[in-house]
Image (cartoon, rainbow, N blue to C red; front, top):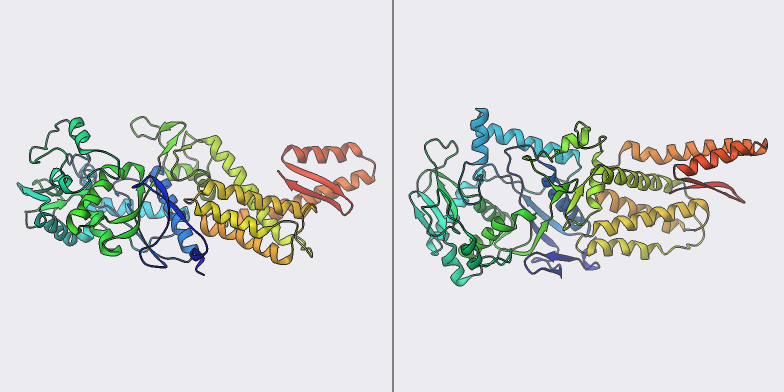
Length: 493
C-alpha cells in the first residue's frame, strides 16, 4: 500500500530550522544515511537512543509504503581522539593498550553493537558499509577535491582548505556558524603546523612508523580522515544527492558540516535534502560521562546489574521510555521515569490483550477512523512518538469502555482498532510481543474474574465486609470494579 500518497509527512530539517513537507527525490523511494558507531568500545545508551530514533523513522517510512534504502556505516578506522586531527586513532589506541590486532577490536565491538540492537528489536539497515572497505573510494574522492582546488598535500597528509572553499560556498550553514567566528575562537594546537589554517581538516593523514592501520596512497602510506568515509559511502550507495542524512546532535559540527563541504567541493552539489539530528541522552539530570561515573551501558540496564537503577528493564520498556520523548528533545534517563514507562507499557499491553474478547455491537459509538488518523497525524508531524503514545492510550481506553459496556464498536471497527494498535505499537514503535505481555492481559482478566466470583459469593452470603475488601483492594492497585445489570466488569486505570 502506498499510504504516503494520502499522508503528508513533515520533517524538521536541521539545515533550514523548519518543518518541511517531505518530498522524495525519486517517487516512492527514500535514501537515508545515518552515521553509525566507531567500534572501539561497547555501544553506549546515547548511541542507542539515536539509532532507536532512526529505527522508528525507518519503520514508519516503510509502513507508509516507501521503498527505503537505509545505509548505516561502521567506522573502523580514521576516527582520531580529537576533532582537530590530533591524537591517536581510537581503534589503534585500543588495540595498542590491549596488545591485540585493530581488527580484533573492530570485531569485538561490532558484535556487541549488533547484539545490543538485536536485543532491543532494531531492524537491520539495508547496507552497513565499513570505512576500511571503502579506502579506494575515499582516495578517489580526495583526488577529485585536490583537482578542484579545495585540497592540498603537505608532508604526506592531505587537508581540506576551508578558507578557499568558503570563498564560493557557505562553510557552517548547517551548524549556523560563521568562519570568521571560528577563526576568532580558534587557539593553536600542537600538531597543526602542516595546515594552512587551524580550521582546515584532514582528508588523509600520514601514518607514522608506529601507526598500525595504514594503506598506500598517491601521498604515501596513511589512513583516511573521519569525515571523509561518510561522504564516500553515502554517495556510493545513495547517489550524489539523497533524501535524509541523520545522526546525533553532537555530529552536526564538525562532522556533518565537513561532509557537506566535501560533497560540494567534489561534486558541486549539496548532498542531502533533509538533515535530521537526534538529541542527547542524560541520566539523572546530568550529562552521561565516563569521567564523572554518570554512565550506564545497555547491558547493565537490561540486566539490572548496576548501582544507578533499582531493577532490570525489558527491551520493550526501554523502547517505550525513549519513544515518550521527541527524538529532538533532550531525554533524561531516571529510575522513576523507567518505572512509570513500565507501568504504562504494561497497561497498554493488558488492554491490547483484552481486545479479542470484546463483544461487537451493531453500531459504533466511537469514531475509530478519526482516532486512526490522529495516530497518523502524530507520526506525520516529524515522527511525534509522544503524541502517538497518547493516542494509543486513548485506544486502550476505548477497549475498556467497550468491555464495561459504556461504548460500542462494530465488528469492522473492532478489527480496525486491533490492527491499528498492533501496527503502531509493534511494527512502528518496535515494541516486542513479549510472551509475558501477550499473556498478561488474559492472566489479569482470569485472576480478576476469580475475585469477582468470590465477591459475588460473599455478597450472596451477606458478607459485605469481605465483598467491600475485595473491591477496595483491587481499586488500590488500579483495578476498578463496576456493577451493572449484566454483571460486574472491570477497568484498569
